[in-house]
Amino acid sequence: MRECITRILIAEDDHELAMLVIILLRQEGFEVVHVETGHEAVEAAQEGEYALIIMDMQMDDAFGNKDNRAGLRASEKIRELGITTPIIFLTAFSDNVNELDGLRVGDDFVAKPYESRVLIARVHAVLRRFNRAQNTKSDVVYKTGDLTFHTSKLLLKMGDKIVKGLTPTEKNIVSFMLQHMDYPLSSSDIYKAGTGESFIPHNVKDIVSTHINNIRTKIGPPSVSFKYIATERGVGYKAVYHE
Image (cartoon, rainbow, N blue to C red):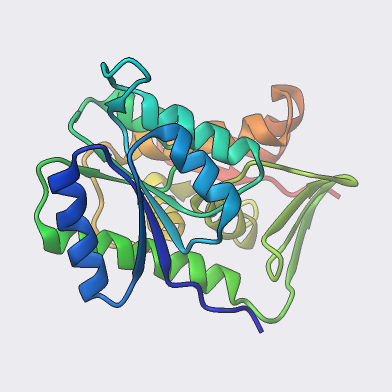
């Protein structure tokens, strides 16, 4: 049986804000580990197991200067190490590019300043969808051509090779699309299946497009990936069945 991990790693260089988040999380019953730099976050993620990582996008660099993408680079390194722990970004920036870039490696965003109940709700939402996927008992295998997805292991394979680097949200999207093979799916439906949330953000098409592009890139070159995940103009996307 999979052990329930209730430890959360938070990377935040604003000490007062970090203490506030730590108090909120401890009130929810979580154990919290706090670090102040991206480098420390990578080290901590390697050394321990966490249910979730909360990563500030902007942190100080080695010279004490604010680096707007420190959290993103640390998260990319964590993914390169094969660590699939879900990541929520804290960001003071509301620009679309920054958020969509982060979705390559992360699972959600909370914009600063935020209400405590909003952050806690996002934490529980991400953990619910990640744990639901992790606790799938029966193995259902979806297959199209050389592409196969095992639901019990959350494992996507192209031929004999494992498709690496998929985030928990992207795995949910793949599973949902393969369950509805050859059926055009809207961006809203894909977003809800991927995140488990009913609220649809105003930029849902951009968010889902980013996830789809990430999945395609990880599957293989366009000549391969577009064969399995097609764009349905005016609707959204669909997984294509091949013998």
